[in-house]
Length: 224
Image (cartoon, rainbow, N blue to C red; front, side, top):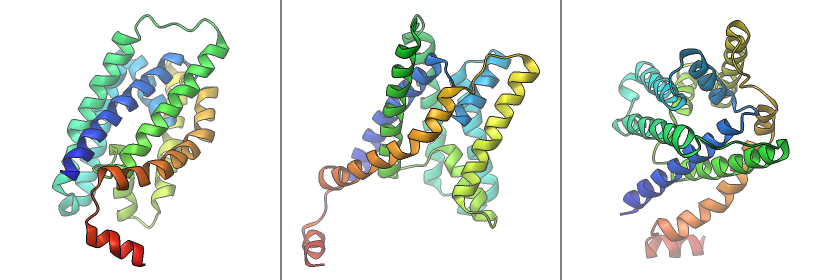
């Protein structure tokens, strides 16, 4: 029952991730490194942004499978349907629900963008705390870290650096709309702290209201 509750909440969090991510894209003042690469590839190929994200995320899962081999657990295959659901939701929000959404004033755009970052940081924090499954990019970075001497934090940071370099390169080579702008750097500064804040609030809520702690365990916690 606990696992079912966690899966239901995780799926709800994915809807929020897609909703917030679509708003950041619609604001068009820059997005995070990975999203900037996805959006640049979408501009270049004329393929929907959610579909490009789906393809890249599934590529990350294939990368995990290649690197981890027998250590790639069956549960990690859940990343495939999650990637598909996320891609479909982003396409729906961005191209259908927000199709006619236009921000005329910069200050409104900035407020919407920061509000969307709050939504995404909360929902991503929820997914991390639930620990049902990791996001494909994070899973791929963890697999690289496991097979090299580098720590996960360094590998994940390098993934962002590479994504930014590729996004900027594509923009300059093919004269694409800018996906790396002030919003990108705002996100770099505030996203991680916000997610850490939300995780510190979500963790006790999940433990107290979602995961049923047996009486014996509760007594042991109190004793200790």
